[in-house]
Image (cartoon, rainbow, N blue to C red):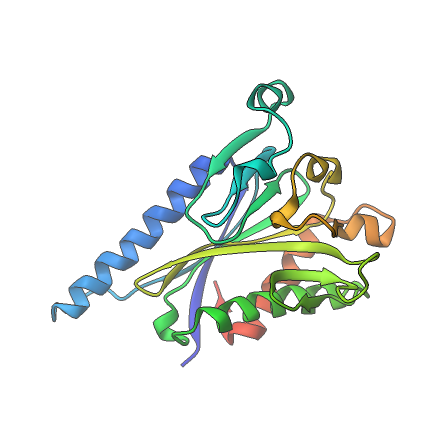
Length: 232
């Protein structure tokens, strides 16, 4: 059965506001699953996919270390950068303008009960999207996300960070693809806790600014393909 995913582009939205919205969608689905488990017949769970951009913000995952933020809280305030400790997996990362952040809220029980497979599927969406722009995105062994030249220590660079949470097999958080992102922000953190690899963007790789709405269209198409779903 083809799953239907409800898509919404939130535009530019403060990180905390988007987090609360994701939590509300997850809780709605969790409540529905509780009712189904109790034998109550009624509404079924709903898949969601949210796209957005955030004002500059550093977010720390559950396995992250605060010392991976290389500037003080006063300096963060001066530079207008927000900071959140989150309940997703992963370490520290940056979100900001020119970056497509994708938050899938999926009921994985309708796909598969396998978080590793889910993360590999998200990576595949990004890899296929990059290929449309002539870029070879790859996985780096033991590191979640999508990279370019991951096996060349001096050249390895990350183009898409990922970190998810799953509760009752419902996902939240997701991926952040650098499109026209200002990469200077990554110099003030140890991105994803990995000190010896660089960060890149589509703009840097291609030497030109991209139409972010066009990249979103490609992402949606590849999401449908990989998850064998229909986005509405």
